[in-house]
Image 1 (cartoon, rainbow, N blue to C red):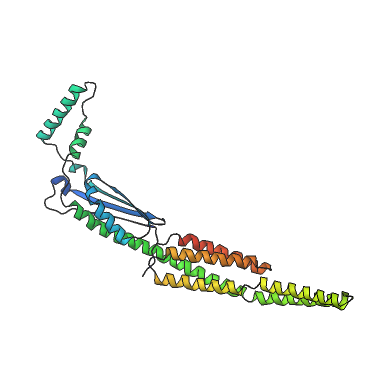
Image 2 (image 1 turned 60 degrees about the vertical axis):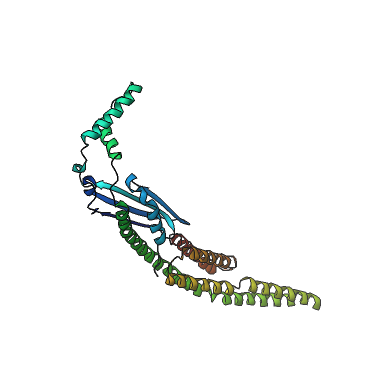
Length: 302
């Protein structure tokens, strides 16, 4: 199953083909546009022209069945092919509108008469909606959602490649950190032996020498425990394995990946806090930079 980005865009248009559509609607086109950005949950916003509002519940259900996360904005409209698609009002409609206007002016003489544009707008609003628009709109919505999903899939594939590249780089950094710890422990052991010999030479009594040796041994043991990052590196490798498994599985993996990114950041922080060398500190910083890059991209996944 592919991995989907929450960012996507698609647009489509279609020509209504119902035979019982009135003349103006027969020359009209249905248009739809879908765009989305990141969101923690699914948030569908519909902007439909008045004639298309009856299709809103079915349209919401159709989109919700295909898209699981993201702030999705859907626009749908009817537009004529040309200005020649304007409907010519009938005599009866004009007489009725003039009658309404005369009635209003009799009660509100300060009002001005209707303009030509206002007459056309008023008669346009009173025109019955063409039949069959809901079915046509849903058919167009399926086509648009298919294109929209394909765009999210393409974006998701790019993000997946980026994440897999970063996991490979994190594994390389972990492999560089692994041999540094024994080297640091060996350096500390040398210092411990030097302090041990110094303690033996400076001590005037056996009791003082014993106390100095115990203190040096305690400090060396504490240091070895403090800088041991084997556990952190093991957990980091386990988190990377799980991230790669989720990406390979696909589907709705955004929230799960976000959790493992947080765990990666925790291990990298602990690695830095235990660092006692500039080289290990640099590895920790490099890890945190890559993990932050991963976190930013994971926020885009469904």
